[in-house]
Length: 244
Length: 350
Image: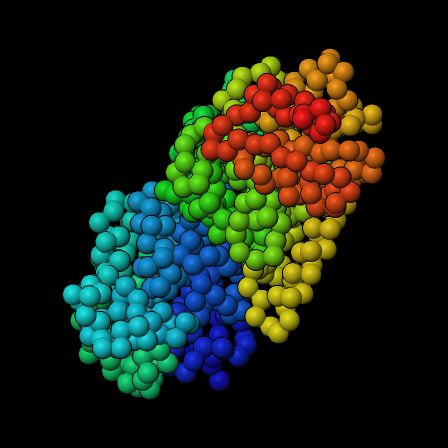
């Protein structure tokens, strides 16, 4: 019998702590596959965020550090500047990157840091129970928007990738999604490309935004979550290659 | 060469691989000096977008095993406290220089010692310690940079060099010591890419039942080692003194001049100068308290280190305080008057 698919070595063989229907497991696999296909495990350092994916090092078999909420791009800067031969990536959620860490990601991109950022957008603060994030959709009910997000009160969803694409230091920005197999294949291409740019010494920051389901915080079943992403989320966060 | 530039050059000689900083007075000479010298040495200088970013850049460089430092002044150090707590939790070495200015808030840009509590108690969250050095001359500022990097690496801790606006701006003749120093443990924990080995993880999160409690006990055991091995202090004419003045940093220099003058007048006064503010020279002060009458603590604050002096004296002798906050610098005359007051018996005062 011919093996057509197997777990990539950098993804550890262990039980997951993520909820049923969560997108982190898929995103982790894409990162691990990119690392293995590029043969860079031995010189890659990953940065885990604050959020559910703080335990990313339990699944990704590379050197990893866990840092304060939002500060990953600054930590990545310190690593890459002192270790230009290493491959540095941060893995950050939308609470981490789009709220408390807005300053750090904008300035890392602005300086053209040669790092790779995997940005998980699930439109809420997941680990803390599903509060409004800057990325929360208009009308979306969360723990802290019980009547739905009201633009007059809480403003509009923040499209960080579009903002970052304006900066000369950001060389590759693409938004993908993890709710359908075809989209996952496309996301894999994007994640690998973002790493490949760094491997090739490209002069700037690469970022892939991955729209990711969070059925638990959305108070949905996994199937409903996928439908909601297809019908609502990608309208606000279109799946486009914004730059590079 | 002013104190700020001298400490920067000393850090370079001590093998600082990376410097990250953000402008703030009165320490801007450091960032300017590093921006020129670090690239000359093929090392990293980067002006960060904030002090939050600067301390996290230090965190990143340090996690890969590099010697990294940042410098700032009081308001900027407040912003770095989050990062210092994470450095403590993750047991990463780092050197942070605080060229103190007047506070609270924006305060002013005059020299101060108002950040003693923040430095010695740990201004961030959690049960942690930082080693704190309080140099009192430009030469000592220079000497404490290699010591700071060595202590940071040996104990995997943040070392705070607590200077002030006077030391930073002052010019004095100095000698750079290039001798090899401590033998330090290898950084097997560093993140260098898991090439041919299992992954390394640098973390401060421990979710398993009892794991953070154990982590804290381990940290405390390490801090006990530091307290046992690393106390530095200077004493002068304490043996026959009736009054002992305790002061650190620039305040100690003024105290030194005052004590010399008081001795000329026949007043039996000596001084103790803590060089490490944490670990504090508790034993040395406690010993002096066995047969002494009066302690006077002099600070450029409303009284912070005086609490540690009181803890060391433990009620065995009176501990008095004289200080000037918010950029006020005590003069020799002011301290001398205070000493004379203490030597005149109550009945003579009427």
